[in-house]
Amino acid sequence: MSTDKNRATAAAILPLVGGPDNITSIAHCMTRLRIGLRDRTLVQEEALKAVPAVMGVVEDDTYQIVLGPGSVARVTPEFEALVEEGRSAAPKPVTAEELAAQGAALKDARKAKNSTPFKLFLRRIANIFVPLIPALIGCGILAGLNGLLTNLGWLPALVPALAAMASGFMSLIAVFVGYNTAKEFGGTAILGGAVAAIIVFPGVAKIDAFGQQLSPGQGGVLGALAAALLAVQVEKWCRKWVPEALDVLVTPTLTVLVSGLVTLFGLMFVAGEVSTAIGTFANWLLATGGAFAGLVLGGLFLPLVMLGLHQALIPIHTTLIEQSGYTVLLPILAMAGAGQVGAAIAVYLRLPRNGSLRATIKSALPAGFLGVGEPLIYGVSLPLGRPFITACAGGAAGGAFVGLCNQLGVSFGSTAIGPSGWALFPLLDGSAGMGVTVAVYAGGLATGYLVGFAATYFFGFTRQMLEDLNTDAEPGPAGGAGAGAAGPAKEPVPA
Image (cartoon, rainbow, N blue to C red):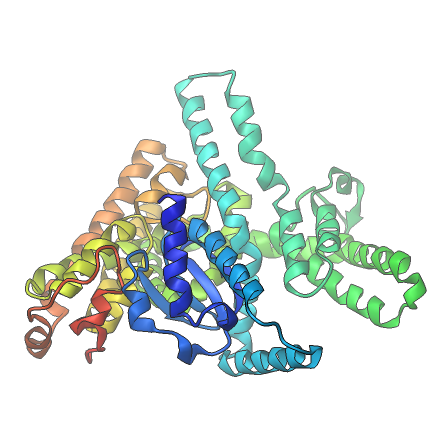
């Protein structure tokens, strides 16, 4: 998509969400433009879904517009620029009191919208790790390429350079986690990074804690997370009690000193034990009950995605990558997307006269094959009801297949987090060799596609649903996954 198209998309979205004055925050993740809104009643949702580049919308603590991977990273800066231009041309609030009143009202509205403290905490943990995903993907692909060149004996002079590029980020990931943690929880980001850096410093090998010699990196990202959280609390305490004249010297010193000592003589040991337990449990689970575990994980992952709770698994994935070089859980969870794709194809064939819904499926399927499931979830299966359940059945079957292969000794995983579907192939790694690993993952996808398709085709519709939905309808705008939701499929049909 060119710059002009990106700006045109942003310009089309902005008035449909209430204009610049209605925007309170702008951010994006892998697929969604996330905006804070002063007044959600100003959103013209049907018109927004009809914008060609918009694949769907999700209402959560922020208003989320699904644009797809790649596109969202290009549209967001254009959207931010248009909002800034609109604000600079608009009249400013007269007094600081008016700004404070607006901020208080927004804060109260957001608190009322948030469901539970636990869900809010999970979102904040996800906010720490989501910004790291692009680096994890890039380094993961380089690690896979390096392994391929090593096994084939090609370009031996390039192998050490690729190894350095692939491993550099992972060797310091604890520092980035500490930095983002302090930033997210209201502390000074660089102090969080400084405390977390203690964990990866080679000199910790000279320190004994609990009768054991520490090792650099012990505790990993979990230790960094805990250390930075502690640093935030120490810093806040210092800001409250240290005299202002001494704050610039005393606060950072005490923050690093107190948090560092607790990290060295407590958190690194405890976090190391927890990290080891996570890795041991994941491997044991798949080695002894892989088929059943895969069935459960693959079947439940779509509901987690729908609720936004899947991001709570990011620290676990990252811990597994730190320990063994790959996360064994991600290929199993990716099977949920395969079930979703199979279900969508079945819906397409079962409703030959519903042009609107078929247009939505055609535009959203390419993203679905690449592991981006939101357009199919929110534009197709979830509004229909029963196809969402049958899609979960496809994910369960694919997960059971991959889990069974793990149980039989073919252990493999993903060297990074973020992609799934076909986009996960370059990130696969395992103990059984690349050929077997790729074959097993492809077999899992095929199983998910077939079971999701069959379950939806034969059990995804009641007779009444087919009568109501299989009617003539004009196709929605090309490329707009939300367009189909504006047709007969928009009204939820009882499952």
